[in-house]
Amino acid sequence: MNRYLVQKLGFALLTVTALVVVLPILFLIGVIVVRGLGAISWEFLTAMPRNGMKEGGILPAIVGTVLLTLGTALAAIPVGVGGAIYLSEYARDTWLTRAIRLAIINLAGIPSVVYGLFGLGLFVLFLHLGTSIVAGSLTLAIMTLPTIISAAEEALRAVPTEFRTVSASLGGTRWQGIRHIVLPQALPGIITGIILGLLRAAGETAPILFTVAAFYLPRLPRSPLDETMALPYHLYVISTQVPGMPLDVQYGTALVLLVLVLSLNVVATMIRGYFRRRRQW
Amino acid sequence: MSTQHGTRTTHHAPRWSEFLIETLVRVLGFSSIGLVLLIFLFLLREGLPVFYQVEPANLFSTRWYPTFGLFGTLPLILGSIIVTVVAILIALPLGVMTAVFVREVAPNWAREILKPMIEVLAGIPSVVLGFFGMIFLAPLVRQALNVPTGLTAFTGAVLLAYMALPTIISVAEDALDAVPRSYRDAGLAMGATKWQTIWRVVVPAARSGIVTAVMLGMGRAIGETMAVMMVTGNAARMPLTLDSLFRPVRTMTATIAAEMGEVAQGSVHYHALFGIGILLFVLTFLINLFAAATIFKKRRKGGLR
View 1: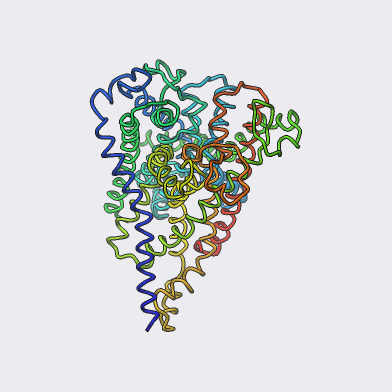
View 2 (view 1 turned 60 degrees about the vertical axis):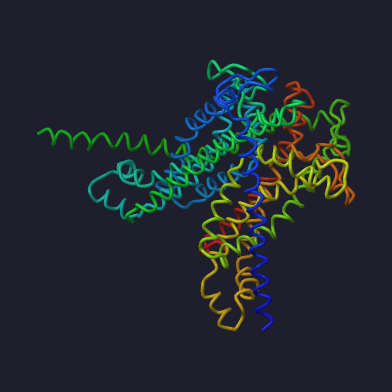
């Protein structure tokens, strides 16, 4: 009979553990939302920083992060989705295919700061792109690839084989089957994967440290070869590098970054949920 | 007539475009391998010079003062290890117990809340966690332990533990999921309680998946940069005694991030930072190789366990 008491205590312990995991997350979000809202104003979102970033707004950082994310999307989506199509539709189970999978796992595991070093070595210095939006976007794109490839491949594989068989039996070539039948079916899953990859890129600091980020640049970027401020790096700068920075500005910046990333997260989850419910197969 | 013409063109056109597209897709498929090699190549190109510019005794000494030509990487390596190991010691029990709770015990409504919350945690940018750590966790550590500064190895380890949790929980959950229902039924049929079945049958059956979870979490922790840099105080000291856990340390990643912006391209210091990059690349490569090996092996046996 004692073991049922043990079970009761055990389950209680597990519940406490789950709370220990979840409560700090809720607290973090709560604090940043409450304190951050105080700093948010129209000016904060749309003005240039002034007075050593202590006043004014964070517009160039917001614009910089949006541009970097778009650049990342531009470079990562075709390569990622193409790679996933190869793995799911063309590749046979050979040692070469396993080598690709191993490479993807390792790409996913490379530390973000090492991506920064690589971007500095290849894009900034070797290809003479300088610290620029192009260099930063390409660095982030490579970092994002494994997420996009894995998610897209999973979505493609989830499409039943019969869809391909029927397409082939109607005289479609393999690519026609992929282009007109398989891809449209897998699209929601692919889009979810892309968003999840991009939101990681949007929040990253280490890869853009030496490839694009400007410490203080109170103007909008003029070309893709221009440097720019970016939200994550800006938060790092104002919370560690600038003495006497008002806490409000720090919380406000953290909130804008958090909202940007988490709203993308919610969009991805909603797309996934919506199409999963509507799916016919 | 026009339809006939149409079919004829589609009959001829696809062969060429089919070939082109297949080639393109194949190239994209293999790009991952090319990228890993390219990354390693560039790290070697910029990092290897340090090994003949600086003698080995200096490289593996205990003092990292680049301005004085001292490039001892030991305190940085040990700093990374101490922070990572303590992070895993915290995250492993938390992660496995949460996975068990979610998979085996929690009512549906609790699961519906927990899983999205863990996804949210995975999505929080590391710089935001670092910011939060500086403002809340560090003062807490300072007061609770009565130490001069809250920016310590321990503070970094706690943050890292939370950053590794989403990986550990989701992989451990998959591992528990792959344990056949019959195992649980057998345990219960023998008269064991649900609690006993979980810890003596289900979790042991899932252990290699849990090891994979820990490896992946460790890979994530050792490579983490911003949050660690913001809360560990960044003092390049040898963390040799037990109380160094509650003093500032400096990790390899933080060293690169903090110093690369200020070095001259092509200087010894520049090459030394790339040298640390090589070490990080190789370390994470090995960790992931190990984790991947278990994943591949189990996949062939059917199910990750």
